Length: 107
Image 1: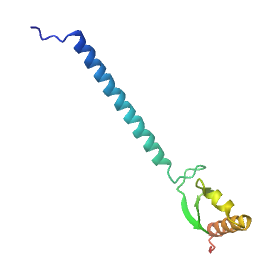
Image 2: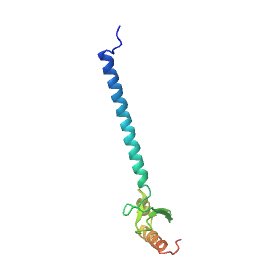
Image 3: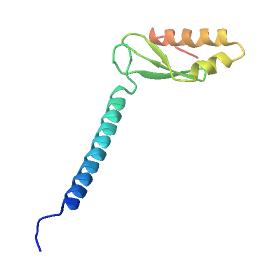
Image 4: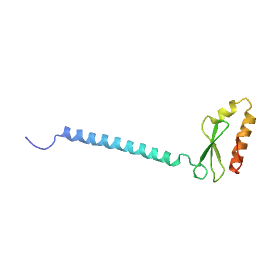
């Protein structure tokens, strides 16, 4: 009896190692993608500064204090547009946002 592995055993272990490497690479890619998403969470897409969230008339607006950019999450513009007087509401929301950026108060 020899201690040398058979050809089938060699192939089996090569396949096993290749599968383990494939799985580990996939896990690493997923971890890197998640870290990338976390690094951009609540950051201004324009200049990268931290966003501040403020509620205005039932809609949350993310505001960049650096550039003054205003960002709505998916579906929030639909909420505004479904409102009976959406032009008035939209004007009030953005008017309040601008007042808050200038240091005024909002209602």
